[in-house]
Length: 148
Image (cartoon, rainbow, N blue to C red; front, side):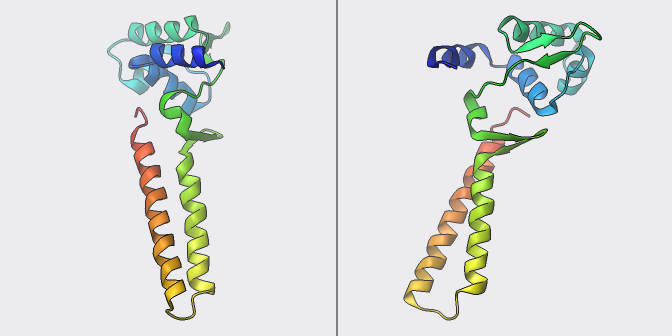
C-alpha cells in the first residue's frame, strides 16, 4: 500500500465505517447485514447496509453472491491497527508480546540468577522493572484505543 492510499484510507475509514471494518476484521468471517446491525447496535439494518456498501465502494469489503454476506477483501494497517497483530481471530497489541517476553525473561533472571543483593543485581532488577512497566503500560494504552 502506498503512502497516498494509506492516507486516503485514514481519512475515509472513520466513525461507524471504522467500527464495521473492525468488527469484520475481528470476526474473521463473512457477516450478514443483520449480524453487523446487532453486533454494533445500529438503529436499523439500513444503517449497517450503508456502511457495508461504503466499505465495498472503497474496496475493503465484498458482497458474496450466495447469502449476501459481506467479507473483507483486504486488511489495511492504518490508525490504531498499526499497533495490532492478528493471530487467527484474535487481535493483540504488539506491545503485549514484548511485555510477555520481557516478563518471562525478568522472572527467569530473578529466579535463577539473583543470589544476593549487589549493586549490579539491584541495577538489573530496577531496570527490568521499569522496562516491564513501560511495556505493560503501552500494551494497555493501545488496547484501550480499539473501537469497542
